[in-house]
Image (cartoon, rainbow, N blue to C red; front, top):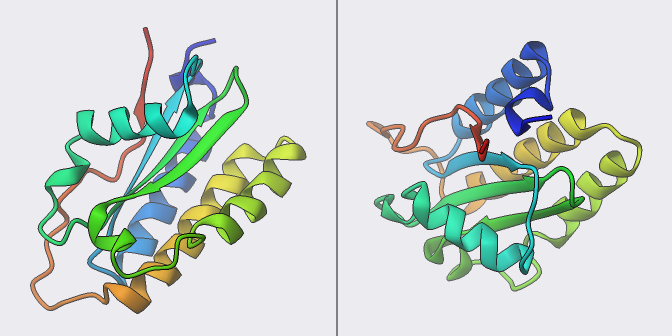
Length: 146
């Protein structure tokens, strides 16, 4: 199955809605990328995808990538330099733990939506919404279909 077929149309819409809602209260930018396989270190590969998607080009360097390799059962949350400069090293750990609980119950859509919502709440503290804020990155899920 191709990654773009992993979620139903309704689930894809729910994930996109979670991104849109999370970004309402923050200048942070959130993306979700789904692939089948990740044959290297998941954080290294997520960093490659982060750059490929141009997420490092946001004005405040406050992009967040939720990366999921469905066949290999790997996932990562990767924040840009602006976020990492103002947050503790274990900033994403509690979000990852909550997502993992849902993933272990095969609730992948719910897990992503939870993670996105929690990331939005965290980003709001460090990068509150500013008047005139521009949505710098697409809200749609990107897929690594081959």
